[in-house]
Length: 282
Ligand code: PAF
Image (cartoon, rainbow, N blue to C red):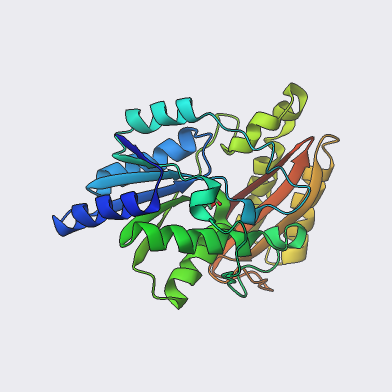
């Protein structure tokens, strides 16, 4: 595995690989890699010839007061995991390499799917995500890019951006990886104190309860929302941000519930703001 820090060097390497007829698989990350990331690397390794993982904690997607400065990092452990997963190239650019002027005058904004849900408490988050992902795709070039479904709204934003801007990237959504008690794997789980970790699976449990209600015939979105919200709010260490059920493709409310749906929830447990989602169908 080669570690590359420069954009020009990465482009040169990947252009050479593609010129030789090899396909590129790309796993964009912010580091502090866990088994969820490993599953993306495994899939990329199985489906493409050259696997590249990027590690870059993108300041554009953090608002003032969020956890940018505290975001966990462990490059040695990340390097070991990427190596063990058979990754070919680790791209670890500095902030100066990515944003050499220190300020960015171009922003990519994806309408509709960026609104609501995460944006209700993080209104600028998806502009930052779409901008850095557009930049990373411009650097990496034609590839298949692998994203975890835990960040379901992020995948919708990236898919829409790729479609609208004709970016030569195929977006591959991969299932959320969970601990045995249902907690979705996330780098931010490392913020949880023991007591918070013990109750954090309530997020997944609430989503499952919402899906059970839909499976039992409930088509009123307000009732499903309330059921999930009440379960999360009943846990004293959980502070609910939202519990929603939306159309899986547009992320818009559907009333009565019909078709492919997504149940999504977000809550804070101490310092950790956690998100999760599952699918359902009527
Ligand atoms: O999901 C993440 O880790 C980040 O949002 C991403 C896609 C790497 C962009 O910074």
